[in-house]
Every structure is written in C-alpha cells, then in structure tokens.
Image (cartoon, rainbow, N blue to C red; front, side):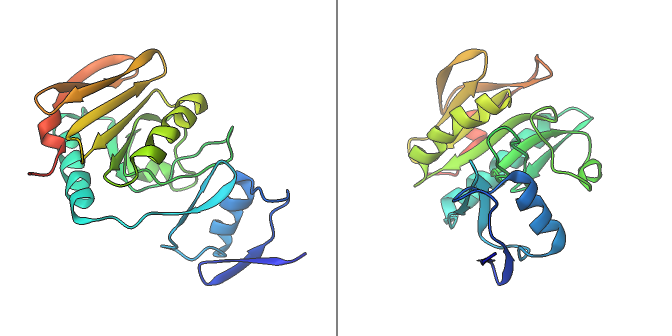
Length: 195
C-alpha cells in the first residue's frame, strides 16, 4: 500500500479511492502521522487545505469569541479552531468557533459531534461561497445552527435546521439557542471588526 504524506509525516493510503474515512483520519492523528498544526482538515471524506486568515478575519474571530463568551451560561464553552466530528459525511473540520456542551477536558478522548455542539461559527472575508456551501453539510449532519460572520458585507448569516436562513444587519441581534431555548442575544456589531 502506497503512503500519503500529511504535513511532514507519512500515513497509510486511504482505504477507498480518493476518500478518507473519519476513523482513518482520527487514527492518523492519534498515531502522530498528521503533524500537529498541519494546515489541513477532513471535510466530506477529503483532505482540504485550511485557508490563511487575514487581519479582519482574525479580529472577527476574537470579537466573536468574546461576544459569545460574555453571554454563555455555565455548562458550555467556546471552542476556537477546534475540531468537530461529522460522522455521516466523513469529516472533522475545525470551524472558527463552536459553542460546545461541558468543558474542554470533556473532549480529551474524542472531538465533539452534533449532539455536543449547539452552534458552529465561520468567519467569511474571502471564503463566503465555501462557508455558505458548508452550511448545508453541517445542518444535514445534525448540527442545530450555523452562523457566518460576513466581514465584507458587515452582517451575520444564520442557518438553522428548523428554519429558513436569515440575514441580520449590523444593528440587529442574533439569538443564541442552546438545547432548543433562546438563552441570550448577541449584537451583530459586537461580532464585526471596526471599519
């Protein structure tokens, strides 16, 4: 079997032509075959290169994390660029932000999945088309909500499994929903870098 190079390490070739299973990917990580910090993630059974983040993207990521943490009740935490599991679609992406049940130490043995994550957040400056495409994948996987902080157009795009997508302007507020209940509102302006 031919080896595939990932980061600077060699890993076994995928078991299916052109596709990688989530189990294979996780085993490569556990074995150290994928270099920590390698700029890749698994999405829909394929290794994809993670995008470089510009200054506006980074500012929105920090501001988004802070805004959500300010209103987040106990029993939840914000993950920043931490992996989430997508078993049905063979993925383990690392979204910009995620709102996850429990504390970080609860996920030392496995990454959180749809049953653990209330919200996935991506920041879009140059990646808007791909982030919109990913919304459908996350929702089909069972994640209840997906936000795109649209830095370029200065708005928030909200996708939910049980509702039509909505676009919120800079002066609006978004509902933070945990376990089916609105627990707080987040000002869209608090998510965006200054102009």
